Length: 346
Image (cartoon, rainbow, N blue to C red; front, side):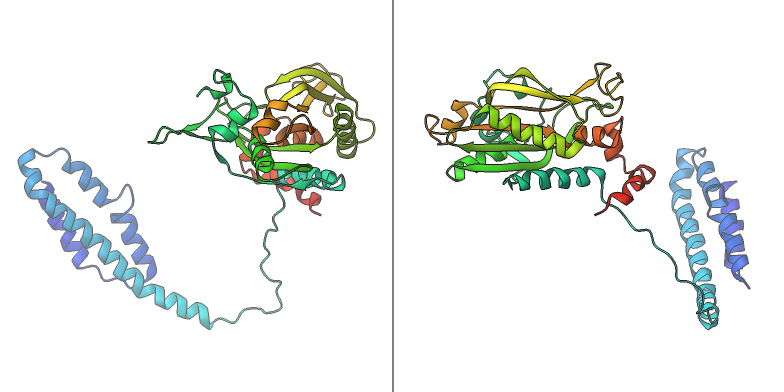
């Protein structure tokens, strides 16, 4: 019977008087491991009748506590001896010290720093803002129509509030542009790096969070030619003089006219691969002239001032720079991957 077994093992534990740490370990292996006696008794307890459970439950719990306390007391008894014997041993002071692993910068941080440095040389400052935004700064001020698909919960992470004024995890760092224009007066020349969030399926080319750098230049007589020359310079500095560039007409709510900029694929050198969808070209950013409605929304006279804006994903830029085919690697914390960039520290 279960009660007889508990009584027998209780008697053995009460008589336990170890003479060495090896006997203490043997006690643990016999009673306290997953296949030990305590675990086996609890498994057997599941099979007894409900009436027996009421009487044996307390007895079995007391037995478990007894076994654990006995082991702890014996362990404390011999751990002091081990510490004392270890402290009396003199170490070899001529041996080299224990080594330690030196970390490295994350590849996204390396590329972000390089992009920032390129634009700083062109007179751009760095501006940062909130990762949790309201509708006005994330959508409305940027000319997003109420029915725009970006406002759908399938595309954006919304944060419900009791007062009905829902917040969002920002979908782009364009919200920083709005706050910058609201708070000051032209001219503005700034870049906005930061983390953004979109409700997307995770794959080799997309993630539910990623990092952006956007740029804004607002002043009198700013033209599309200024935008193209700035981006040409950026690409040549980052990827090399041999990199080919092309602009394609596009649409964004906050710029008009708008374009997407492609570069020749750095991974397949234009031959065609999964990254460039076998076209030889990879889109790296969107850009355009700031829509007059956006300027007016931010309190800037659109008849006097004009400007351009652009935005790029740092993951995509890093993929092309280091020939990385899967952007999921950036957030998996695999040391084997991250250690490849140790030599990039500067």
